[in-house]
Image 1 (cartoon, rainbow, N blue to C red):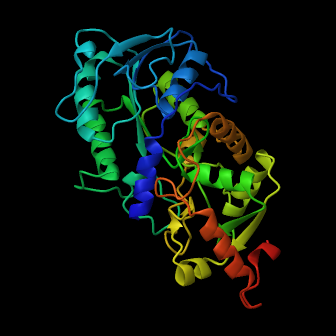
Image 2 (cartoon, rainbow, N blue to C red):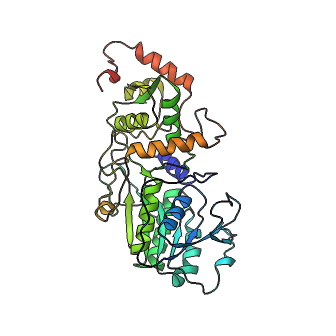
Amino acid sequence: MMKRRQFLQAASTCVASTLIGCNGYTGKTTGRPLNILVLGGTNFVGPAIVEQAMLGGHQVTLFNRGITRSHLFPGLEKLRGHRAVDQSDLSALQGNRQWDAVIDVWPEHSSLVDETAMLLAERTDYYFFISSIAVYSDFSQAGITEESPVHQDSPGWYGGEKVLAESRLQSLLPGRFGVARCHAILGPRDDGSAYHYWLRRLSAYDEVLAPGTGQDPVQFVDVRDVASWVIDSVEAKRPGIHNLTGPDTPVTFNAFLEQSRQAIGSEAKITWVDADFLRRQHNVRSFDNMPLWAPLDEDLGFQQISSARALAQGMQFRPVQETAAAAWRWFQAYNFKSSQFPLNGMGISREREQDLLDAWHSAPVNNQELSDVM
């Protein structure tokens, strides 16, 4: 599970350098503009949330260092400070000022959530925190819900710190906090390597190796859908914890890649290669070598986490094609330092991929090519 934990942590730190308009949901108001404080607001998830709040007519104040992409949102009020273990500067948040809601986008350290929540608990009606499915301690069964076991007494790593942060909010703001436990977040401004790998492969080559039969499930959530849920929760003051692990109906890895391929206008052939051929004969690992692939025989529940609670309250997950198209526009516009894989521990080189394809095509006939029967 360590590779999956590392991916979830890396996904939450993705950043961007420009502002790209989001298509899809339109903002709605609760009858009056809310005064919202966003802690952060200039990384991957943050700008999407700020945009959604602005679409809803709300007044947004940002609290951050003013270093990372300080050009974003020039018309908004910006309070300067920083959050860091043992050396935070929260002086700009001191005083008696009130906010209708606080949105806490980033910190992986529970102590940073604790100190801002303690400072603001009596000065806000509602506190929303972005968490992760990394809080869950057991992925051996499908259908994980918000009541499933989470890590206990395990500080110092991403999932354990998220659990501690959630617990502190429960103590400090009972009934006045919301939490989104997100699966892999994809879409515009994502400069991570997982989805980047597949879209680059599909766009650049005539044949792309894909792992297994294509029937393993895959879950993700579009960053714009996360933003829509967060602002809707703020408007409704929706309490409690909700999984955001779309799509709303199960999607196989085959459907995920095929719909992504179609969305970016690729004509690449996707060749599905037997899982044991990859893992046992050629030491190709799931998830890091083959991004987003979590085979059912390894972790049955990792890509089958329930979002039934959020769906019952109006959560909407947009189709794969919309996420793929928006992510691809971003990937084309963003100046990546490198597009050669493996990158940040994700993917395999094109040379190794071609060697694997050659080995698969030359395998005995009883290793029938899965691509022929998909």
